[in-house]
Figure 1 (cartoon, rainbow, N blue to C red):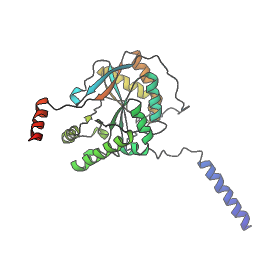
Figure 2 (spheres, rainbow, N blue to C red; figure 1 turned 180 degrees about the vertical axis):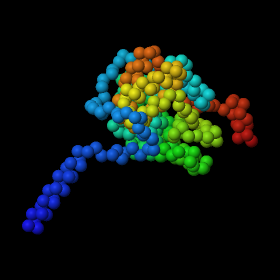
Figure 3 (spheres, rainbow, N blue to C red; figure 1 turned 90 degrees about the vertical axis):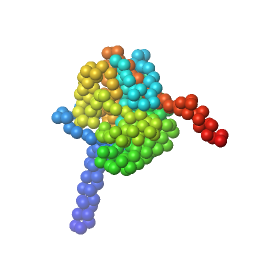
Length: 280
């Protein structure tokens, strides 16, 4: 009898374990503090995760804009910059890259240092594909809750982590939660980094449908006429809605601008003065 109960218990345990594997486990690979809030509507079923084919020809790619400071980052009417925060993450960032490639455009990826460390091969691929690389602190800390020295340590640690993972210079930065201060902005500029602001927030972090994200983005864009669009490559709905968004942008005559950092050169007279000092 005792053996019978033991065998029965083991059978029930095995059954429960098998059932638990059918449930989707939480995605522990996302180590970012991005806020995900309900919007009052349930998201549509995920469906097939395969990336659809939107091969060209496309006419969405615009000019290359070289900037050395925020003052240089001026967009014309019908120009947008596609920016993606919080990655990279396998299975999501790579799908975004595939879609961008199909439409012949590039994005600006503001990477969290911790995520770049976890997925260096993917981080490097983002850079090798010709996208703009920026940092987003090391672990998505709210810098306004930290003292100045601690905040700068978080910024520098993130910049170094992304630089190491991508193998390229990190010349752009975005504040997590867009929480900033004039002092931090000035200190970051002194490190030859351009702060990336946000003109159009897609709010793809809301638990909502890809259609809703696309419509919200286009509605804001129609009001402004141009701007830097904020998205997040860590969310499935972003890759799901991106082809529709890009198709709408193309149909309405928008162009996607590629960002490049231009290092400032010291004035010739200062260089000459420095040479004179060195030779004395």
